[in-house]
Amino acid sequence: MNLKVLVLVIFTVIWLYNLLLNVIRMRSEKNPIPENVADVYDRETYLKWRSYHAEKSRFAIVTSTVTFLVELALLAFNVYAAFAGLFPKEDPFLQMFAVFLLSALSSLVLIPFSWHETMVIEEKYGFNKSTAKTFWADQVKSFIISLIITLAVGGILMAVHTALGDWLILAFAVLMTLLLLGITFLYPVFSKIFNKFTPLEDGELKDKLSGLLEKNGYKVRAIKVMDASRRTTKSNAYFTGFGKMKTIVLYDTLVESMTPDEICAVFAHEMGHGLHKDTLKRQFLSFGQMLILGLLAWLTLRTTELFLDFGFSGMNYGFAIILIMSVEFPLVAPLFGLLTNWISRRAEYRADAQAVKEGYGEELISGLKKLSKNNLADLAPSPLLVKLEYSHPTLSQRIDAIRKAEQ
Ligand SMILES: [Zn+2]
Image 1 (cartoon, rainbow, N blue to C red):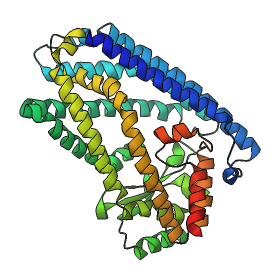
Image 2 (cartoon, helix red, strand yellow; image 1 turned 180 degrees about the vertical axis):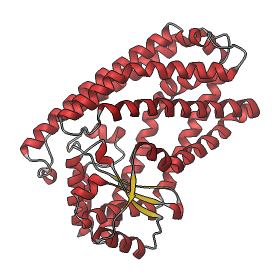
Image 3 (tube, rainbow, N blue to C red; image 1 turned 90 degrees about the vertical axis):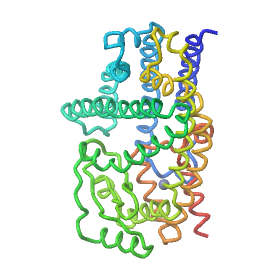
Image 4 (cartoon, rainbow, N blue to C red; image 1 turned 30 degrees about the vertical axis):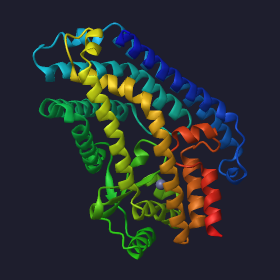
């Protein structure tokens, strides 16, 4: 069988699968809201939530279809090979660069949609804080950063393949895991490009957080507040960095909307993740994922026919990565996601239990309710969606578990 036809068929199946998920998402808006989360939204906010989700899912169908059609055309008409033909044939790095450049350029088609999503939909529901200037600056920065990241990944694949041949699978997995760790490590640096961080001011919140961390022998380098309100009204909090170099980052929107005890509850939860080494476990899972990617890369690079079918005169590292990321991996990812999301949801329950243990059960519930409200979270997603792609249990499930742990 012609491999090109096979690729195009798989690519179409993946798009249909995503379409199906989006349709389920749209329809889940009719699901009844569970009793224990009925007070999260007042009627007006609830109606707003429904139309926000309807609009987002409908729009996701549009954007994923546009992306699909553009990519399908690039693949079907061998555009990648034609574009790469404009670059020196004998230089494999430039050949790879050509493919990534075309891929990045084709993603520019999505800018008007991204504009509509940020400046029209998010604006309509009061989330958007981006100005035209920050929007365009973000687009330029994202374009450059994604090109750099794909080139780094491609460069690693190329170097490992040239140097180690069939050892590629394992070596690629190890190097990619290191790269991911590097990105996690450099995340604070990256985010400084987009946001400002200021140390948390002295006061009740800082005292309480420090007390909580000290009591559990948990060391962090700093507690910082990020100016998230510049772009969004959604709120969040997270840890970055490793070991004793961890930094706690609080969105300024979180600090403004929650009481100090609720923020402590959210942090007792984050600390629970730390105490159970959840981040480490997640790294192991992502290593497993990288092994799968390594295996796919190995298979792809060996199959010269695949490249010939798409108009190349031989193997192209960039095109190999495009095939792996948009055709091969999306085919196996849902199965892998089923496992990792199940593990992740269990870890969330355990982290919630940690907050209960610290005596913050009720504050966690009210804090999570505020977070859900601020982020206009789905309170009644379809159970199938939760199993397939939710890394966190639903708010209702979490509240049930917290109340059970409190008894
Ligand atoms: Zn968590």
